[in-house]
Amino acid sequence: MRVLVRGAGIIGLAVAEELLLRGHRVRVVDPAPCSGASGVAAGMLAPAAEATWAAPGVLDLGLRGLALWPGYAERLGVPLAAAGTVLVARDGRDLVEARRQAALLAEHGIEAVPLDPAALAQVEPRLTSRAAGGVLLPGDRSVDPRAVLAALLERVEVDGVDAGVDARVEHDVEVLATGCSLRAPYSHLVRPVRGEAVRLRSDDPPSCVVRGWVFGEPVYLVPRASGEVVVGATVEEHDEPAVPT
Ligand SMILES: Cc1cc2nc3c(=O)[nH]c(=O)nc-3n(C[C@H](O)[C@H](O)[C@H](O)COP(=O)(O)OP(=O)(O)OC[C@H]3O[C@@H](n4cnc5c(N)ncnc54)[C@H](O)[C@@H]3O)c2cc1C
Image (cartoon, rainbow, N blue to C red; front, side, top):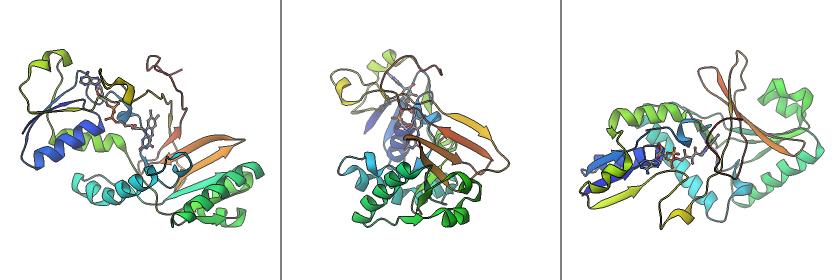
């Protein structure tokens, strides 16, 4: 097939690379490649940690996706961090949330290890003096999305042309991978949720992905092998210009 892919974020690039491997002729167009959410994402591959928000079926889809990642990351030459997620509770109310999530995961047969403050000290020593306890989710993973994008860009050529020009490109199939906005008549299928994150350098980073509730507010820390720690993120349901506030 001749395939036109609109959008060079992780979805468009991953689809394009797979189609190229299968022998199709692929053209990817994006006026600003990798400028969307993929380049700023924290890179958590964390269906267990996200399970409370998941609609039925999403957890299963996430687990199936996660199962594909070790082979995918190896093929792309991108390291996968495998230390898991620790859910940390700041106070008793936060701990109720963490334990509720552990119970939900147990219902689905997913390993979730309750941690009292002493056990938490073994996992993340720097947190204990300020935490009421937590839950370890050993199956979650994380990856640096920028490394994944770079690896895909080595394998997939992107035309940085104005998207309108390519309406005339001959193709049998078109893939719309334009992120949080889709053109009509599909625009109702997605909605923008803006997130702001902070990237720090640390000489004493956590070993796991750390997710917590701090007085009811969710927050996460994602360590990278480079010493970078991503702290995130806001979750804002609007499509104001993507300018950090
Ligand atoms: C702060 C933050 C943290 C996140 N953390 C995580 C996480 O830890 N784990 C996780 O799984 N997900 C996370 N996400 C979500 C994740 O980033 C997105 O789901 C994912 O990156 C979407 O990829 P995409 O390729 O669909 O879109 P995008 O990466 O947004 O790419 C869309 C591309 O389409 C292009 N485009 C737009 N319009 C057109 C057009 N008309 N023609 C051609 N090209 C066009 C844009 O220029 C852009 O390059 C996070 C998101 C944010 C904002």
